[in-house]
Image 1: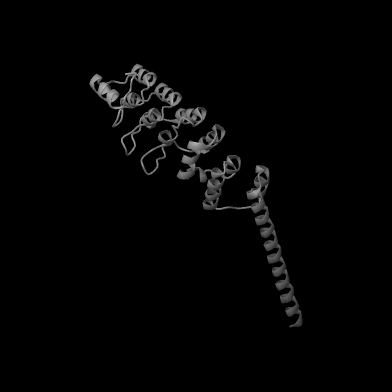
Image 2: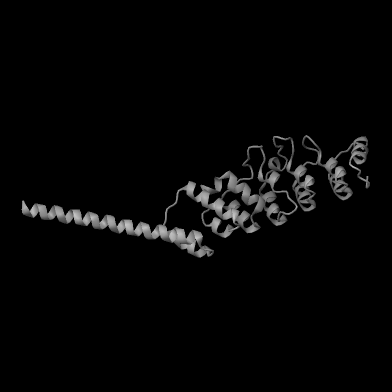
Length: 228
C-alpha cells in the first residue's frame, strides 16, 4: 500500500513537472512572438513564428496591422493559402503595397476575380495615379478578358476608373490587354472631355471608342473644356 502511494505521488509529480515545462515553453514562445511582432526586424518575427501556431483569424488581424503601418515585409511572413483568401487584406495589398508584395500574393493564389461588396475587382480599385504602375501591371497580367471588362454595381469598368483618375499609364495598359473602351454605363471617353484631356480622348478614340459629336460639344461647353 505504501509503495503504491509512493508511485502515485511520483506520477503526480511527473505530471506536474511536464505540465510546468509545457507552460514555461509556451510562455517563452508567446513572449518571443510578442517581441517579434513589435520588432522592426522581420527576421525576429520569422524566427518566432517557427515555434508558434496562430489561427488564420489571428494571422489576418496581424497582416492588416502590418499593412496599415506599411510593414509589408512582416505581413508577408503570415501569408499562406488561407490568409491569401482574406478579401479586405488582398484589396489593401492591391491598392497600396509595393510590386514585390503584390507578386507574393499572386504567387500564393490571390485571385483577380475576387469581388468586394460593390462588385469590383482589384482592377477597379487600384487605378489611382499615385499607385505603382508596375504593381498594377502585375494585376492586369493575371486578369482574364472577362475581368478586364467586368462591370461593377455602378455600371463601370476598370478602364472607366483609370480614366476618371486620369491615369494615362493604366489606361494604356488596360487597352493593350484588351479592355473595351465602349463598355459600361458611361463611356470613359466622355470623362476625358470633362477633364479637358484631349490626349486621353485621342488615345481612347484610337483604340475603338465611339463618340457622338453633339454630346462632346455639350460636355465641352458644360465643363468649359477649351481644348474641345
